[in-house]
Length: 219
Image 1: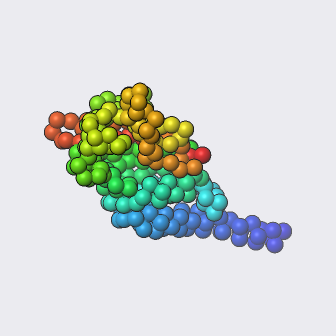
Image 2: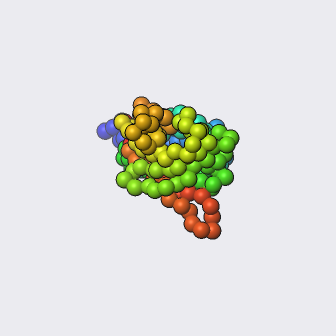
Image 3: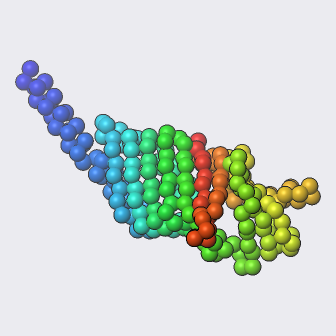
């Protein structure tokens, strides 16, 4: 009986220590991984019981970063590493994903569902395009964004209307018109991140730019 009580007490102590220390350790690991791409302000992790963190599961993760810069492939890899997190909220003051820079970016994860939003100034959009190219927002509805392109996008010198949309889990763009719609450009593709919809809207009269949104899921 004394041995059983001793073992039970030892197990209880281990569980208490794990509950206190494992979330901190996990937060430090996440901060280190995300910190490779910029400046991380804070990370918090919650898990009950905490031992499930050893298998990559967590109840919630909250990340705040000042600035990040990473490729779309690196961003997709970080998201896949977080597949075991039930609820995740990431806020970044300034993030550059590939050539496009966004401010006040928010990413949420609920189960396998991802939703992201951020603001891109007109200067940010122009900087993401090759020199001499430009786009103008025409409309955004039904998970698609229609723009007017100029400067030779899609190999056409004149201004051309084009649409960006999700197709078979990829983010693609193609020009509009019977003779041009077969010209398709893949903007993002990853086997684990299934893009479902994109959106854009003007920021307002005082600030030239756009509010961009994306919805996706992990698979």
